[in-house]
Image: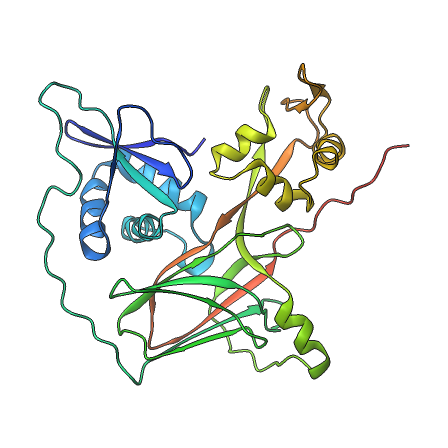
Length: 321
């Protein structure tokens, strides 16, 4: 379980919550800050080995794969800051251990960052391509956060490209938007870099490619245990049960979901209401959970290639005879 992870600093204790996780009783929601200030505070917390392990685990669960995956403590800090800035993770102050209380997270005056001004001649160029065929992947929705803290949402076109002119100089962080993701329409990041794809969709295929949605995700395998349900597994990862069912089986129909739990997950036990509950004996006993991909520190004055593959082929829906 990745929710309610704790960071400790002296007498203070912070909780890291998922986007939709309710605020525990007695805790105080905090504005973690952004940019250099946020990274500085996380870097200070990461000096403690326990805090670094906690941040690293969260980054691996929510972050990216490939070249920009977290490898050093600095990578962990930067990706954790990105997840907090985008709201994928939230920060809360735990109740103070004594009557004297504890100060809020932003305890120090932020240092002034040098102003970042748009440069007319800087164009951000991204392209998403298939790692095997080098073909462009259209319909990928991304959220982009620039050095001046401005944000934009953009979708790859028929050539798999996003071209944004007149962006602020510096770097950009990229977060994939996973609403509407299913196993059949999802792609996973393999690596970054490689040649810019010269392939273009044919006239006959342009319309279908432009209107078909693709979603960039990191897929986590969740092995079910005794007494878990679809609802509390979804809540664990900050999703709704419908979103989790839609991702795994492409349906939110209650009857179809129950049938999928029996056939695809291998459920055999039911609760008093006649709905399936999970057991560690379920075979295969696996749910696939979509997580956003986060990339940090991409230079805006360079072109970036995201090479992807199909996330996972959905299991065939077959009946036993």
